[in-house]
Length: 149
Image (cartoon, rainbow, N blue to C red; front, side, top):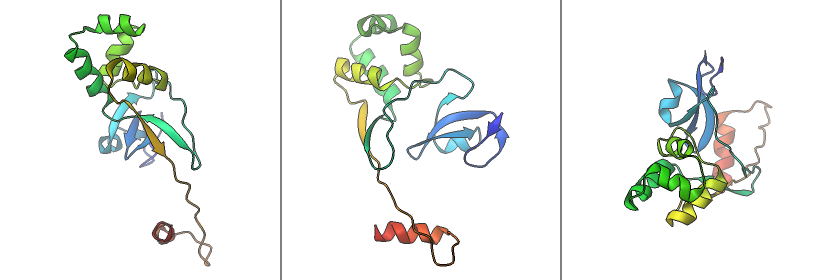
């Protein structure tokens, strides 16, 4: 077992999206966001994540609902969609149930097939944080930096 990124509790962890960030959270803390998968299960492929002020792409939060709605709107069954996308039916089912996040490559393939938005651009702003004269860093320092930036 590992420690929760939010409370530090040593317990079973989940990968969760909380306020736009992916974190390892315990069952209690994961309620503040959306659980994506249990950490001891197969995790989805996450690519093209860039840091330090560069723009990147991310899969939108309600991808699972959009994929299911678009598949049903077209009258397709899971196996039919899987054949059309050349993917495994079990993978499509896990994605639709929100148990697994699709790779960016698969999300773009589905986006093109359905004509629905599944991938968005994320703008990462690099924030430079300066220490105060007391050499102790406080939450007030962060607020001052954000207010002047």
